[in-house]
Image (tube, rainbow, N blue to C red; front, side, top):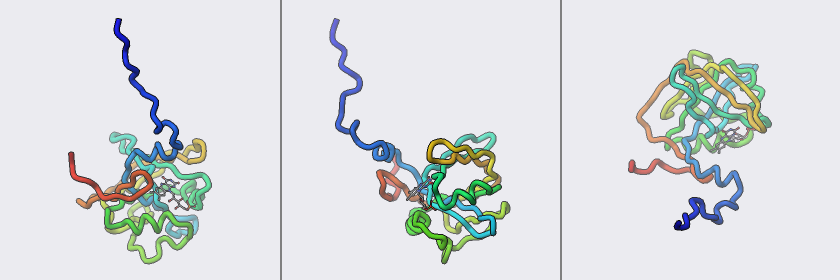
Length: 170
Ligand SMILES: Cc1cc2nc3c(=O)[nH]c(=O)nc-3n(C[C@H](O)[C@H](O)[C@H](O)COP(=O)(O)O)c2cc1C
């Protein structure tokens, strides 16, 4: 009998911190928006967005339990996932910074669910909140898509902690 070579070889990359290894998964970039109890627009940059189901149309994302936005999203009946285009890099930076002035100078309007939608995005999905569940240090939020818009724009990409433009199709 011949020896079978090991399928997994030990690599230095096994030693990298978990966060760095997870960042090998490239994502788009979103701003998730809603309103506070007083009706003020609230939002943050998030790349934890993903599709959960097509029928019914469900999406998910997760929010740090110690985020300044947690109170608003814990009680929000609706939220909007704003998928950023590659022209919206500054919006991503702005909505990832601490502070309550993130919407200053941003062009947005209310959608039918009375939550903000940002103009000029590659797509927006307005969702009704159907589930909120704390797992570890994040709240997993699931929404049912009630309205959406799409524009043929190139998306902003996040990979290994840096912003990128979309490459050419393989
Ligand atoms: C590209 C990128 C993706 C992010 N994704 C998330 C996310 O999915 N969930 C989250 O809670 N925070 C995420 N953040 C961090 C928030 O944007 C940041 O914590 C927040 O805006 C800072 O203030 P806060 O206390 O309002 O959360 C991300 C930041 C960046 C730059």
